[in-house]
Length: 119
Image (cartoon, rainbow, N blue to C red; front, side, top):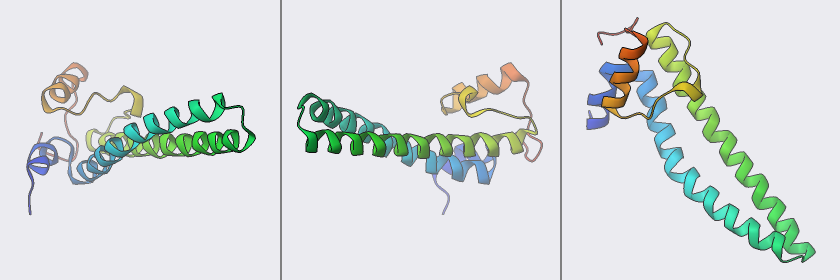
C-alpha cells in the first residue's frame, strides 16, 4: 500500500530514508509534547523543596534527556540515509524541515542529485 507520504518522499530520498523519516516524524509527535510535560513536572518537583518530589523531578529530567537522545538518534539516522542517497555527508543538524518545497530548495542550494535514484 503506497501512502501519500511515500509518493512524496520515496522519489526524493529513497525508501530507507523515507522509512527513517516516518519513524522520526512519529517520534517528533511524541517527544516534543512529552518534553514539555516533563519540564512542567520538573519545575513543580524542584520548586517543592520536598526530597521525594525532587527525586521524582530528577527522574523526570532523566526521562526527558533519554527521550531527547532517542529523537536526536532518529534524526541522525535520517541524515545518514539521506547522505547515502545523495552520496554526500549530510549532518543531522543541517537538514531542513522536511517539507517538499523546502527540501527541494535545500537540495537546489547544495546542487544535490541522487546517487541511487531518479530525483
